[in-house]
Structure formats: C-alpha cells, structure tokens
Amino acid sequence: MARTTHTVTNQPPPLVGYDVFTGDRALVEAVERHLAPGLLGEARESLALLGRATGSEQVREWGEQANENPPRLRTHDRYGHRVDEVHFHPAWHRLLGRSVSAGLTDAWDRPGGHVRRAAGFLVATQAEAGHGCPLSMTHAAVPALRIEPELAEVWEPAARSHVYERALLPVAEKPGALLGMAMTEKQGGSDVRANTTEARPLAAAGEYVLTGHKWFCSAPMSDAFLVLAQAPAGLTCFLVPRVLADGSRNAFAIQRLKDKLGNRSNASAEVEFDGTTWARRIGEEGRGVRSIMGMVAATRLDCVLGSAALMRQAVAQAVHHCAYRSAFGGPLIEKPLMRNVLADLALESEAATVLGMRLAAAYDAAEDGGEDAARERALLRIAVPVAKYWVTKRCTPVVTEALECLGGNGYAEESGMPRLLRESPLNSVWEGSGNVQALDVVRVLRTEPLSLDAFLREVGAARGADHRFDRAVRELLAELADLDGIEARARRLVERMALVLQGALLVRWAPPEVADAFCAARLGGDGGAAFGTLPHTLDLRSVVERARVEVEA
Image (cartoon, rainbow, N blue to C red; front, side):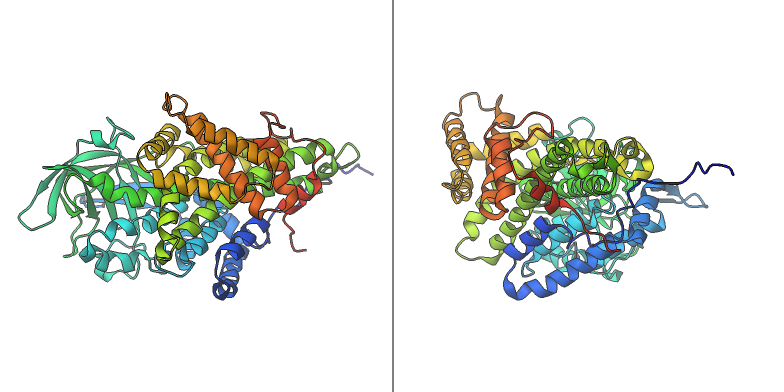
C-alpha cells in the first residue's frame, strides 16, 4: 500500500467565525468603563453584531478580495469626456457599506458617540484597514464643516448618515456622502504653509476658483474634499465638491493613483485644479490651518485606533497559532519563552487600546459641556499627538514579532500577516509623521499650560499604586521642568510621556498582572529592546490568556 504523504497535521485552524469585539477583553472593558450605564446594552449588542460580522469568513474574504483587486482610475468615458472616477472591487463597497451602516461616520453630538464609534472603528478595520480611510475622513470633517453653518446644514447630515451611496451626485440627492482631504503638495509635504495652490475669489461671497496640484488626496472617490489653498489674505480652508448643485462635474482631475506599500484596497491620488475648480471657503481667509485642525486632530486619533486594531489582530493571530501549534513536545503557548513573547506583544496591544479609547471618551466629555469639558479638551490637545507619535510607531515591531510567531507560515501571503505588516507603518506617516507630532507636543508645552496641567492630572490619578510608575512620573517631571534644547530631544520626551500615560491608565483599570508587567518592562527598566524579554517572575500566563480569542466550534 502506498504511503500517504499529504496528511495535514499540527496546523492551526484559521481564525474565523468569532466575535472580534466580545473576544477583545480590553476593548469590552473600555466600552463598559467609558459609556453611561443606560447606553451599554444597545452599544454591546450593536458592537457584538459588528464583531461577529468582522470575524466571519465572508467578511474576511471581502478584505482579501479588496486588497487583491486594488482600485483603478478611469479618467475618460468611452466618448472621450473627462470623468475622473475611481472604480473599486465589489468587496470594497460591501465593507464600506457595512461600516457606514454601523455608524462609523456618526459620532458628534451623539450620547457616547465617540466611544461607540472608536470601538466600532477598532473592530471593523481588523477585517481590512484600507476602508478605514474614508470612514475617518468623513467623520473628522464635521468640526470643519461646522465653522460655516450653511455648509454644515447641507453636508453634515449626509456625512453622518448610516446609508452608503457610492454614486457621484449632487449632495442634495444623496442619502449619504463621503468626504476626503487634499492638503499636501509635492514641494511642501507636511509644511502646508508652503502650499502654492491658488484660490481666486468670485463675486459671490465665500465662493472661489482654485488652481493647483495636490500631491496627496485621500479617498479621491469621495463626494467632497477639504482643501488648503492660498487666498489673497493667506492660507485658507475650502470645501471642494465633486458634483455641483446643478449636477455638473466640478473640475477635479485625478492625475494618478499612488502605488503604495500597503493600504492597497484604498485609493490615494494626485489631483489637479485647473483654474475653474469651484470651492466654498471655510472660515476666514488666512486661517486655514486653524480651520482644519479639528479634522486633523480627529484623524490623528483614528491613526491611533487604526494602529491599535492592527496590533490587536496581529496578536490575536499569534496567540491563536501558538495555542494550536505543537513543537518540541507540547503546544507553543505553553513554552516559557514563547509565552514571554506573546505576553509582551499583548501588553503593547492592550496599552494601545486603552489609550485610544480613553481619548475617545475625552471627546465625548468635551462635547457634553459638563464641568470637566474644558479639561478634557485641554487633555486632547496634548495627548492626541503624544499617542499618535508613540502608538503608531509601536505598530510595526508588534506586527513583525507576531508574524515571526507563525514562523514561515506567517511569511506566506495566505496567512494574512504580510498584509498587516505592509499596513503597519502607514499610520505613523499619515496625518503628520513622528517629528511633526513630537514638535506639536513641544508647541503645546510652550504655549498651552492648561494642556500640560490636564495631562499631569490624568497621570496623577494613578500615583501611589506602583513604585515604578511613581519613579517614572518623577523622572518625567524633571524632564518637563527643563525645556532647554527641547526640540532635539522631543522624541525622547514624547515617548516618556506616552509610556507614563499608558502606565497610568493600566494601573488604574487593567488587571494587576497586566499593569505589573507593563510597569516592570516599560517603566521600571526590567525589559529588553526586543519583545519576549519580560521578567520571568511575572504572571505571563494570565496576560496571554487574556489576549486569547475563543473560537466557536
């Protein structure tokens, strides 16, 4: 009898058929902590529904299909008319439609809206990160729209709608709309004040025509865009719709789609305004950066949440693999050194989730108008760039190490880990790279003392619970007291601020074994530069089990 050579043994089952929300203990606890009791029941139900869909085999296939079939640019129709349309695979539209219907563009002025939306964003983007871009841009555009009440009256209901309508139509004819952003130019990049796009005023108040070339346009298939351009009085913010009120197409020439490292399912483009591109001013001339900063801050928080989602998915995959894969006489998850690696990764993932959700809660508190509203706004001003700097930078090493836990299987495309790895650097680059975030924190430290006070109050709420944390706070205060040469050491300072803030939140809210391990390794110096170097005396088994997903049989 011929020997069977293709019997498959010792291979983990795929991680599908589970609830991405309910299976994430840190996320569930954050939602329960930050939402009012009266909102919890419905929120849990809707997030679990989204979580089950995200963890289903069907939605996972949609994510794979959207990435395997990236968007295509169609500049002209069959008759030679310029159309400038981006075509997506049907899987992209299914993913985006599901997330819009789940309310992931609807947070402002909604009770607990930012916490609910942040949790949903963290869940949904684990299936496919690219479709998070239009969700983020549309959500974040609302503060800028509100600067002009007439614009907000038309565009905000469409942006916050739970209906996804992909056709390019006048906004009055759409049950829901998406918004994008076109800020940076090839000569300036992050230095948007160096923009050269020109805005020429028309006779009607607030109306202009634009001439210029944008090097990066996010979500170019959207219905409208926030754009920065040089008006007579200086850099100014504008709304540029794709379709005008009379149904005609605005002059919006998509020159090419970017060929990116990751984020393949999502379109990013270069666009050109030809001198007839109609735009509506937002805010005063010369105050464009101030007008758009609300959008930038909200998208920066989404970069934190997006990185937390990538880390969570990578860690879930690694723990799942090691729970089923045996080597050297037993399951990998039982091997002390592998357990150390998994626990270290789980710490980083939980710290990112807890921080991102705390900032989402700050948005809700700031909107509520209660006695803490001013302090929460001040906290956001400094904590968002701190978190954006650190969490997005930790994403790539976490995903890389998680991939290694799967060995050669993790390096194969079929595992899904290479897609996570290609995506992992993105949030550190978008909405201001690391230096931009660090220098923004320096600016706040120099000019906005209320923000530093809010930060120190947040950190101070955990003092006295862990001696390593307390020592780290003292060392941070010494650094903050000396601002000489601060620009050159800004990254070091912001890193310490992020770690102390994460430590404070974990000491207050995480299980003792998680807080103990974080303080030991991240604040107490009892950990190495690589993952898997936690002190062996810690309760690593409990940390790993907390990160494990239970899959239904």
